[in-house]
Each structure stands twice: as C-alpha cells, then as structure tokens.
Amino acid sequence: MKRVAILISGGGSNMVKLVESMTGDHPARPVLVLSNDPEAAGLSRAAALGVPTAAVDHRPFGRDRAGFEAALLEPLEAAASDLICLAGFMRILTPGFVARFQGRMLNIHPSLLPNYPGLDTHARALAAGDAAAGCTVHEVTTELDGGPILGQARVPVLPGDTPETLAARVLKAEHRLYPAVLRRAASGDRTRLDLPASP
Ligand code: GAR
Image (cartoon, rainbow, N blue to C red; front, top):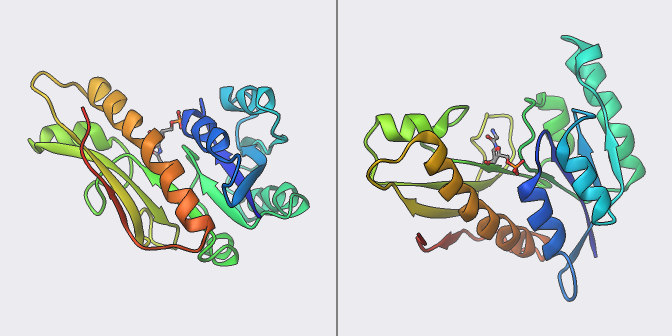
C-alpha cells in the first residue's frame, strides 16, 4: 500500500477528490495533508475526512526556501510518505527538494501543458482564442510545470467564457483526472492517460 501525502495551499477541492478516491482496492492511502498556509480551508476539510494534517507557514522563513523546505520535510518524513501529490500547492520547490522525491511527486496544473505553465492559465488560453482548454497531471521535475506528462483532460472553451467560468469547467475535469492518474501511478503505471472532453 502506497502512502500518499497531499500538499495544498487553498480550498483543497482536488485534495478532497484524491482522499475520497483512496478506498477499497485502491493501491494507496492518504497519510497526510500538509499546507504552507495554516488558514487553508482544505486543512479542516481533510481533518473532517479523518486525514492527519500539518501546516508549515512559509511566511516567517522569508527568502529562506531551504529552511522552509527543511520544516516541510519533517511531517512528510514522519508520515513516511511514498508519494506526494501537489494539489493547488502554490510555492515553488527548490531543485534539492524536488530531487529528493524524484519520480514520486505529482502535480496538477490547470492547462494543457506544455501550453501555459505558471499562473493565469485561463486568461491566457482565452486571450489566445483557444478552442479547447484543460488540465494536466505531471511528474514534478526541476523545470516549472515541465515534468513528464501522466495525463490530460480537455474541456471546450465556450462562447462568453470568462477566466472564472473556464476555471470552473477545468476544475471539474481536474477532479476526474487527478484521482484516475494517481490510481495508475500508485500501481506503477506511468503511461499517459487522456480523458475525453466532457462539458
Ligand atoms: C487547481 O485549479 C489547480 O490546478 C491549481 O490551483 C487550483 C487549486 O484548487 N494549481 C495551480 O495553479 C498550480 N500552479 P483546489 O485547492 O480547489 O484543489
């Protein structure tokens, strides 16, 4: 059974879907939900689901990323995590931290990578006039949003979409994609999964 830690910064809707998926014959179980924001709404949602939680506030560390990451490692190691899922975790991790979890850390990103790494993905897709948008789950490497792609889900861009309406449609696709990719990755299957478009 793989032990999964989920890192969040906000509401944690992807985290909830991942936790809810890890039951029955699933090859993994959630062992920790960890946030860089002690006020993240996802922490109480995780606790309500019976998952241990921890927070390491990044702010007192200022520019000391190594110090912040050393503090992050403590609960991760105490939980003996095999796999880490970044789920709306909005801090950039240093190469040293990423190397430690090479091949064992996944991220979900709200665009069809390699399009639109970084922030403001939905506004950028709309500005480009794209007919489709979507989300990507990938392995985390030292290249920001650049690791091997494990899965994608597409959604249509509809007339009148705003960044907010598109984000909501993409988020629903994220909720289908991330649990599906995690299940495969936890059982050692790293082949790419492409989910068909759904409205
Ligand atoms: C999700 O849309 C996720 O793809 C995005 O943050 C949101 C978190 O929502 N992640 C990034 O932008 C990473 N750069 P959630 O907290 O409800 O899961």
